[in-house]
Length: 84
Image 1 (cartoon, rainbow, N blue to C red):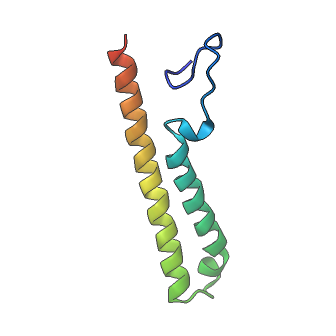
Image 2 (spheres, one colour; image 1 turned 90 degrees about the vertical axis):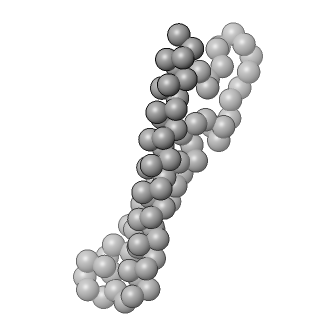
Image 3 (cartoon, rainbow, N blue to C red; image 1 turned 30 degrees about the horizontal axis):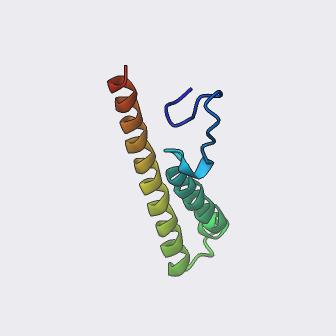
């Protein structure tokens, strides 16, 4: 069990949106969805500059989300080591 999850006997409930990984993973999924919606146009050569711009924004959101997830994961690991 991770520290952000209450023990089963404590009676506390932690919302999924309060977990350390939620917002970063939401960014990764949203960025991936934006890229996925643009993918067919980009790969068939039918895309204009706006499709490329939207896909680039999706990629930026995905990368920032992945970086945030990794940073939060490292912080979580360090907190667990400090609590031992």
